[in-house]
Length: 91
Image (cartoon, rainbow, N blue to C red):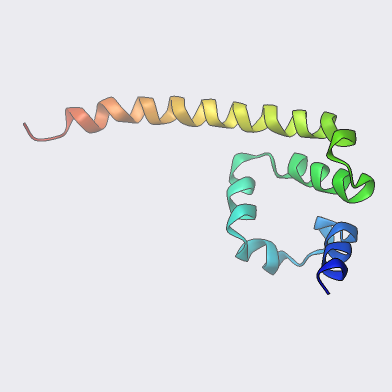
């Protein structure tokens, strides 16, 4: 039974899932907010096609670069908000 589930998971494209399934998945919501969702889907599709992460390194690296860029922008945004929050805190 478990092997059958793995085969189904590996052969189903992430794009064939319903929008409701994606919206209920917290990981999908988080990745969508980063702007890197299409690159994430490319990694998933490559993995489903090749069944070997080593053959998907180009897609993995591109997705990684997107996520690193998003995280850097987010840190910068939070750093800008930090001084404003400490300035308004009561002494």
